Image 1 (cartoon, one colour):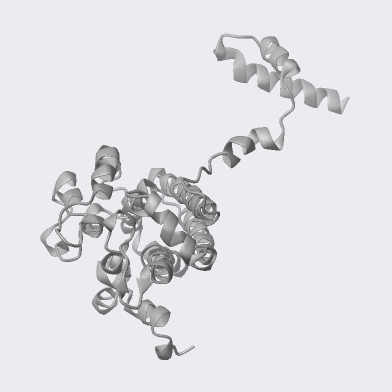
Image 2: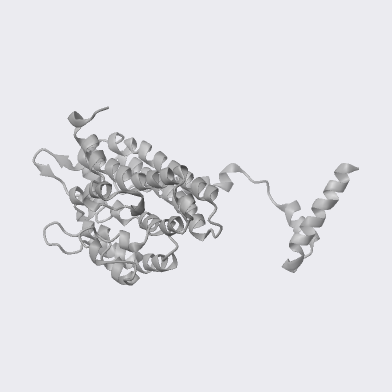
Length: 322
């Protein structure tokens, strides 16, 4: 009898759910009766997913290159998934804030720890040949990565450090966006003109990125932090999580890219250009860009020295203390 009563309650709940749809519950139950059982491969669209790797050359390692970048974009989507929830949250609940940051950092940790696939997982000789078939495409053109930055911090913190002092939150979104730091990483190293890589990216994504910047103006993750109460802002777990996100996004992630660039593009007589003509030696080092999502958490000295200790640790082994 108890089981029957439970079934009746569930049916009543379903009837309540569907009463405003214009169809009675019986119609939906008919549909359920005829519906196929769900399979794992249908649920995640496995066949479609495995068909998305389409190399442009005959070099086997190009497929590794494609798949790793696709995996990276999926992790970026996960990060954005958490960021959007944080930005949209109106409760300012500390536990919610910390949990979302924990998830974001876990995704970054997975990305950073897996980057050995890019550094040592491909033959250099193959890479240097198939990369020429990819021009002018570049990882620089990852729109999701730029979105992550926009959700994390206001545009004035993303202006190139050489001009950052001339701008503030009072400036318009378009003016700030025109001076965003990453544009300088996609100028031709010889002429100073915008590369085709940057022109393509701006044409495709500028309206969308500007729209996002306007949507999150004064409601980025940094703003969410600034709007917390004084005691909440000092919470050790929150501060640690925010700093970890800053270092993951703006130090560790660029540095693993530098490791890959040095392996594949560095050479004794100089350095090869990245795909798209981007100047990776000037663009990737975090100590050159000084991008910091949450500047209030650091002293002036820490901001001035941003990224330097990690660069020394990564690329000057004789200076390591551990």
